[in-house]
Image (tube, rainbow, N blue to C red; front, side):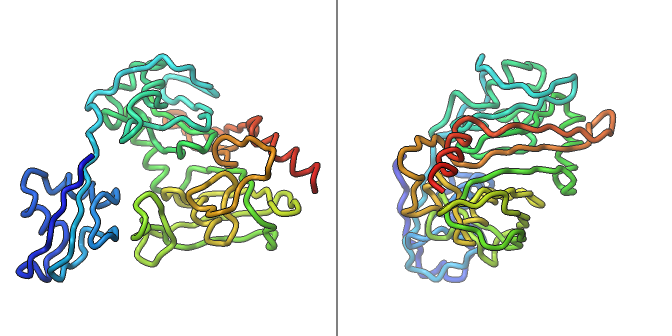
Length: 307
């Protein structure tokens, strides 16, 4: 991926970043440029900026265009841990390390491709490269998620997410001893202007609310339960890190903090243990739970032994 380097002329002073780019790089559509900006692939003097950022003239603008993934998703016969399935929904327990859908650097081996192989009928549901995907979990987060098998189910479930009626409960092992037994983090989250892979708490982001409670304390770590009221990218990871308690195993937000020695933790110590929603056809509430995976159980056993 060779970046395109541009210099903003003085005559462009006051112009919006996205509008100036549309003229400076006419081979890219306005919609494509917005996606590149939102994904942090456009930098102004080395910093990620929003599409509405006003230019002053003289800035150095770098545009990185990742290779486009294939438009049609190929099904892959990858075994899924199916928790529940009927004609309308598929609930699976995603392992840590599996990417939700194709993207830069992850073309195959995705949950979306596995779901398409398992239920070919979801091919026309939702987006072409993420068929049936209603919500997502980060690559190194494990646990429950629901896939819609019909367009009606997809519309109903996405509407429930927008209305914040889907219940999602997580367990996480975080660094440090969390003092308050319960708490609420109500802090907007947006892309970190200085690090395109990170999200951050800042006023220009979108509102995000996480409720948490302490389940168990150890010498230098805490097991917490977190419930999402919103569903922003990296929400639990960012909110806990903002409190000074990043999730164990999360190198992106934990800085120099590392898991305890002797525990080969793969992925984040973060697991979606409960998922509840109204069934799109019966309208009855359905609740699904998942036990902590062995990798997190081993970490907790180790912490209890050294406490």
